[in-house]
Image 1 (cartoon, helix red, strand yellow):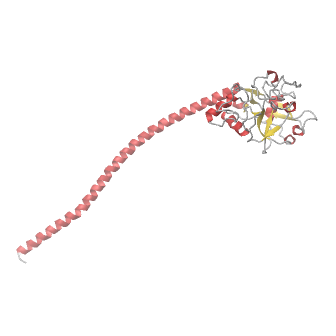
Image 2 (spheres, helix red, strand yellow):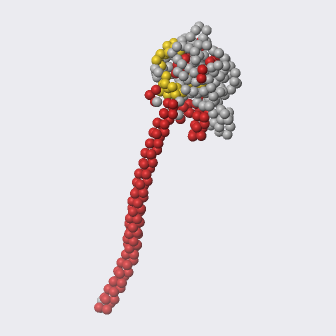
Image 3 (tube, one colour):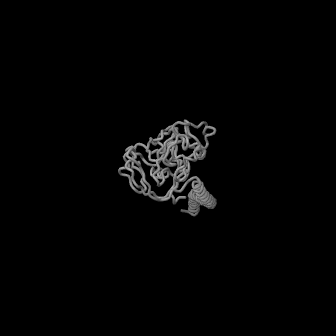
Length: 314
């Protein structure tokens, strides 16, 4: 091979090598550029994430402050509710009283008479009124009683006991107020006292003087209209005006096996206890020992309720 041919071939090989090397570097350079772009995007995302984390921490801190304020407001509301309940209730001291019928003519549902040891508790001075229940309806969106119109009671009946409220609805209201319904034994002690009186005010019944009953009015009256009918502990409307829901299930024979200390009623049943008689009942239903019942889903124009609380909660 002469020199010219050698250098010619060598030059061709060099050109081919440079061409191949250039083509090989092109995808590599493209890959490097993609990696650099991804690293740049990753750096930007980290920076943005860092800013987002700072904002999230700031938002969480503000949320914690708001939650603390809500807790303070809730505690204040509960304190105010307890104080409000206290003003509307009477304390019934712990002690023993006779529960059930006091003579042989009492119906079997009231027998046998038995001594009950009752812990201290608070009970409402009056049944819950329309005015009080309206606050509940407005605040919670609960259904208004069927005798109301456009979400409120009839004019002039604000201080009448709320009626057409089922046991279930009464219980929800009580919980909203931070209270509960009284047990049957709590209700009877509050009405009867410790001297075994047959009526809340004493031993004699005089129609038209001490309570709204026997259809003399034909409907409910204000809860503070009958001062001479107040009970042993100064409670209003424990006889007449409206029956009142109690917490207990009803069993006509419950007294035969009732607990002698803070009885809570049967474990189950079809109906709930109502007490106190009402505006269209006879004198028999007004006795402090009279027992009646109604289905807990039922609402009637002669059934209302009052509230109770454990003594330690007020």
